[in-house]
Image (cartoon, rainbow, N blue to C red; front, top):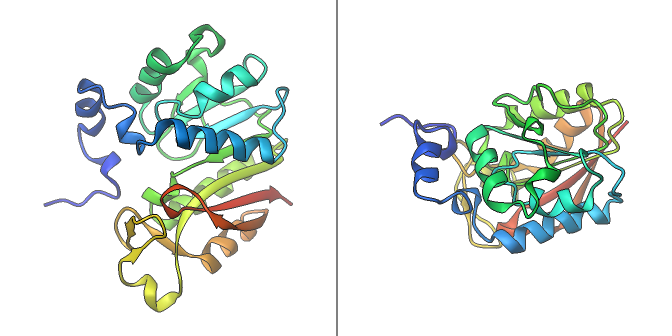
Length: 223
């Protein structure tokens, strides 16, 4: 049996899930709670309506349906592995879909951010790198730093293992999720995350508090 790097990369994963109306479920459930937390994190880091926000791995717009009414029109951009999932979120979850142009919903499978404005000031990748191997985080950091010269802050989450020895085994996170070193959901060492962030051109701030499912938050500020 072929093992994919994450469930989201399995053939027909999105087609089957969307056909069953599961666009909220496949992005992790806890829709309202997690969306409020994401928006609260951004506001806590100084997001204003005139800023330009990039929602990396935006899924079905769990954050977007809250950020779009807050931001000036045209200031929210979303990327995801599945363009179909983004469009379903636009149809089903936006209170006023006219405030978000579908041209700002970008299918992107390698963090190249094609077509995204270079005016981005804030970016968030919530529960993205929890489902990808570490080199995807490296690529995303480098690409984000290079693509967006006006970027002020990048927020992202990971699962952590307590130490190198423990990282080789499954780790039960504070919220009960069991994570792994070589299959999704993935955990990393804090030292590795901090190092990758620094060498990619950011100053990392690894926060002590744990978010839903035990995720750790890193606020990365461009050097």
